[in-house]
Image 1 (cartoon, rainbow, N blue to C red):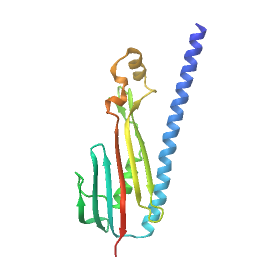
Image 2 (cartoon, rainbow, N blue to C red; image 1 turned 90 degrees about the vertical axis):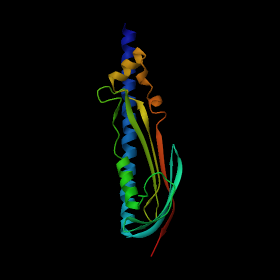
Image 3 (cartoon, rainbow, N blue to C red; image 1 turned 45 degrees about the vertical axis):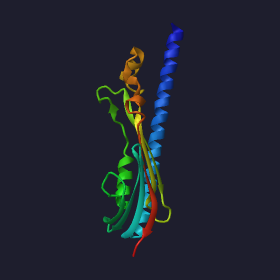
Image 4 (cartoon, helix red, strand yellow; image 1 turned 180 degrees about the horizontal axis):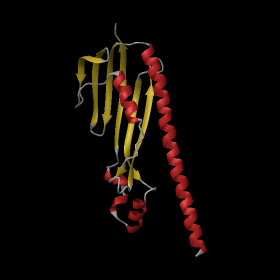
Length: 187
């Protein structure tokens, strides 16, 4: 009996430690992107680039496409190429705004807030151009991971119900990668 109690206590301690480590990793990663972005935005806006041409490559699970755009005063002036199934909206300020939005912590529960066996998990990686400051590459990945903090998860695991397989529910999650292929200031 004592051995079972000891093993249960050690198991709970291990689970608690893992939860804290994952939370710390997610928290420090998000703040690093925010700090880098604040610096990059200061660099970008200090140069007052109001007229430029930008070629963007977008990669998702459905494929790869490119947009070649001329931007003046943060508005799309001319569309030279649009292979994407979306309107051409990518100005540098919109890229900054999108990265800021993606950097918000994702704490959503799945399948619902009442039954939180899985949690939305995200990863954001951004490379900024050191001279101009614009986001040169944005990689955003998402999926579902087991919610070890929830009693629903442990009940599903013990009872053998299907709700535990978080990765299968999202077919592996998703990826969006935006790369600035070329950036050219215009007069």
